[in-house]
Length: 89
Image: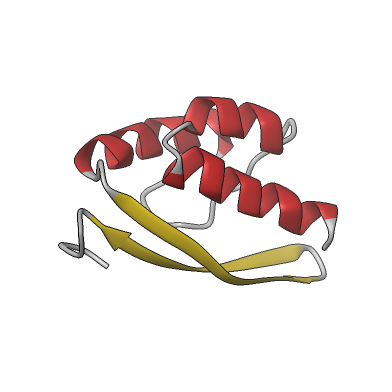
């Protein structure tokens, strides 16, 4: 796997699934972090701000990475999520 993919998967699993957004963003991102999900601000602060609330609202998280790929400057992560024992997927 590439370092970009390893970092993206680590950020997703440790930061979101495992509920450690602050630690994961410090570990897996650099000086600049661009978020492409709507509703999440760019930068480490935007990631932490959004996902701390997400984790609080969704204390039970089954998150699995299906695939990840790099295409030039873009990185895509396809993940399966089941939240709060299937209340949201």
